[in-house]
Image 1 (tube, rainbow, N blue to C red):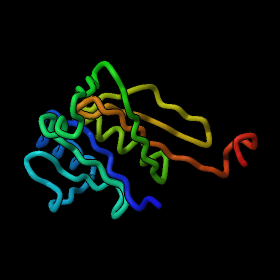
Image 2: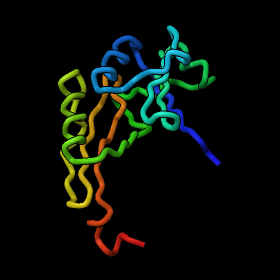
Image 3: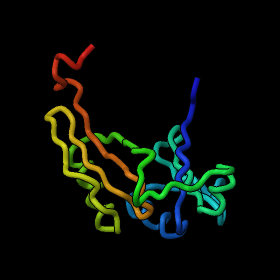
Length: 140
């Protein structure tokens, strides 16, 4: 079965993207980094995002155009964290470093979600979920 996931995202300025995500606390794998792309480590050994400059990204999508992320959304990357405070800390740090809040905070009691658009308008949902507080009708 699947062992790892690599989410490939097109970026306009690789250096600015690396700087932005570094300020959020993410690390990068230098083994998979050059002038065309970098491998951002989301969760050690299992979850990664390849940030790829547009010219190189186009080589992976022959006869297609890169999505205009200011107008269209093709993916919402959702990352779970360990607390509501961690949600707020990460999203506030992102906004402080140039991201935009994507929508209002959602607090459902058992799940707390905030979302931001990064420098290239990719949406990142950061959430905390306490399954013990889930409504009974949602539990299996």
